[in-house]
Length: 176
Image 1 (tube, rainbow, N blue to C red):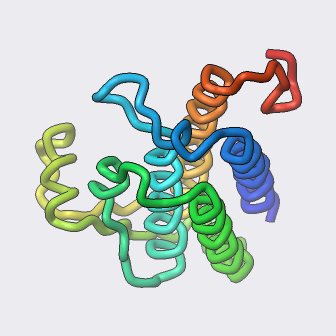
Image 2 (spheres, rainbow, N blue to C red):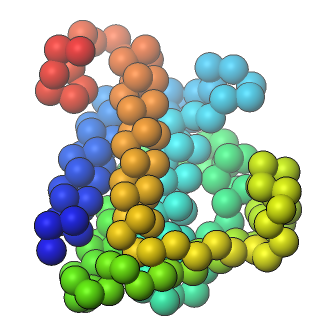
């Protein structure tokens, strides 16, 4: 299916950029926060893995929601670069298996994304009308949003890496 292939191709490109960034940085740089209210590259990696698992593996693949969203942002050096890379790749493998099992007719089917009560209440401030700790969307819409979210945070990781690394080498393969 073209949509699924495009989503996976795009997310795999972004994943390899993230891996390259992690490999270029020290453990300290991976967990460095430019400002106290900003996320480190390590936090962003945990967040990407958590979001992808929740939305694709759990919601579309009907696996239990094991995400601890708030812990993604409070972690501070408790994952090595190698462990972050393994986590991102493991989740991607699970996502690819789920998506390989989808039939084109299922793209219009709705999937439900569940949140813990704690995470939902924290996020509810942005969506005050929402009372239930879940939302439902068409699988095709969910895939586009997951890919967009992944690309957004991958771009942040690339930018932070450019600021933190001592070399002028390109992270993306482009000059910009």
